[in-house]
Amino acid sequence: MAKGGFPGMGGNMQQLMRQAQRMQENVQRVQEEVGNTELEYSAGGGAVKVVIYGRKELKSIEIAPECVDPEDVEMLQDLVLAAVNGAIALADETMTREMNKVTGGMNLGF
Image (cartoon, rainbow, N blue to C red; front, side, top):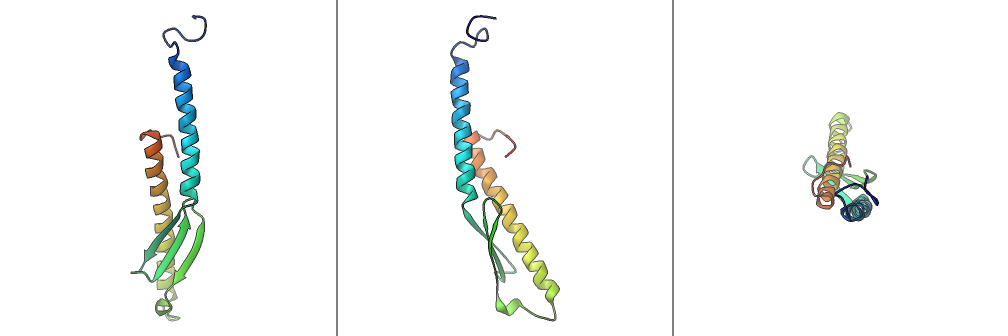
């Protein structure tokens, strides 16, 4: 092997390492930014509203009083479940979209 690295790579290896380090820094920055972003998702025409952070931590759940029917608790449970699952999916989509901007669409498993 040639002195100083791989044959034919020259200074490109150092440049590649710097680019990888910048990408890693950008990925960490985006993960933190999106992780702290509040995302909102509603179900049942706004009957149940969920606010979640991008890191998939629930912040709040609001339930409209008119959808609370003691005779139909199952419907309310379904609405809450739909809203939470929708908010989680929104967080995933947001993180993926923002990571694709940083990584140029390379699937790095984030």
